[in-house]
Image 1 (spheres, rainbow over the protein chains, first blue to last red):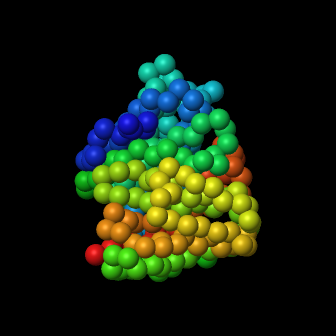
Image 2 (cartoon, rainbow over the protein chains, first blue to last red):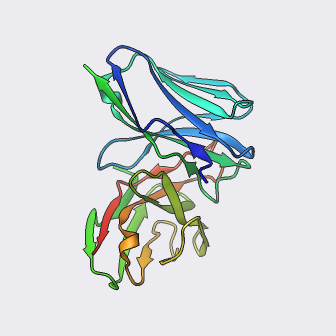
Length: 114
Length: 115
């Protein structure tokens, strides 16, 4: 059973508009959430994260929102740029420590249309 | 550039062959790990290490061995390759176990095909 779900395999957005990528989780023990971005033939790179004690974290064009009661988080990219075209993975960890790794979603392929 | 280096980038094996996927990092990170990514699935943890001489199993360890003799290197061994091990393998490292302090840094992956 998937503990981190990204239900949209792909998303197409026009350049300049807002991209919203969604992620749901089932494990109540998750207390830290991260978004990774992946280009073809490269490894994932860290984008932004949020602790469960917050409901929003912002870094430039990227904002992550966390709704703990709904077990839902979203990544907003404003404005969307062509270089944002990539696969985005939502990931979660439990208990603060990450020795046993992150639990990843399946990813959402974001395509920015010119 | 500093970071996580994986070799080879591509590899084709026949069923039953063995091989070692290499991973090296030059950031003096204590924590290293191996993930596999299969089509339509997220990354899944195979093995990890919290320091030289210490390794442990992740979510999908069967068919793989690891060792950590130095801080820099964390090779992944396939003892007898099976078609189910066809995947893209990523090595990752971080200086802390606390994900709030230290996100994982990933290598560029090894694409393995077992025929």
